[in-house]
Length: 266
Image 1 (tube, rainbow, N blue to C red):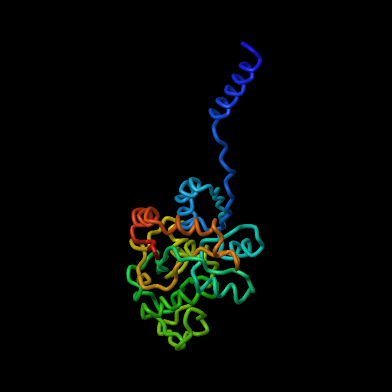
Image 2 (image 1 turned 90 degrees about the vertical axis):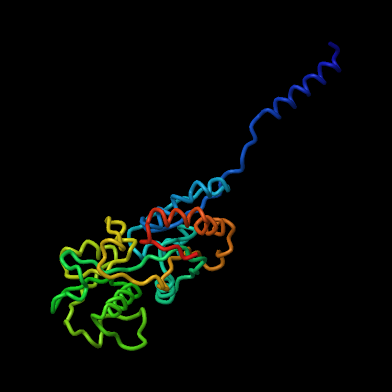
């Protein structure tokens, strides 16, 4: 073999070897999303492999309260959050001057009334104790539900910002026990009625459709949304997250797993 032939053979061998090596994929893009565990955390876990195929490394950061996920997003500790309905977000933005915006609705969690001893919400005794969330929008939402159950009347036009001070008619002289939303389901054994957000109800093994004695109707305006910092709404990673969460596959997962306790909003 002469020198020219040897060189040509070596070049061909090198080209063949390089072609045989596996191509190195671009590193996955990290996307950190804050949430509460159920159902938002479960939905994020469902879409995680879907996003992985699109080059997105979804990192799920779970919190057990309603304040920390917005604080983490505003402080740029996460890229988005997924746990709150629009009235709660609007109120948080207004009160705390957060630069956070709604991106897209995903599901509705009907709020409901639970009781350890009662089967009919109207059988609550005189002076009965009723636990409700203590944050502005979920507390108001709970009072609106009690109004729709015929137990109280609120000042006209007060809406979801209602507080116990806005109760203008309370025939049974109900006493309201205001607690952190995450603690309300644990109060069921200690009160006559408890008005519980469905994410926390599901988290302690309660099914709103089976265990509640009165439930919000399906026309609820309280859709849970993906939220991002203002200006990031069109971020491609966040848009891919929204597409995955509002896909047909995710809708079928919600319907099958939660059997109506969580309602798709898309």
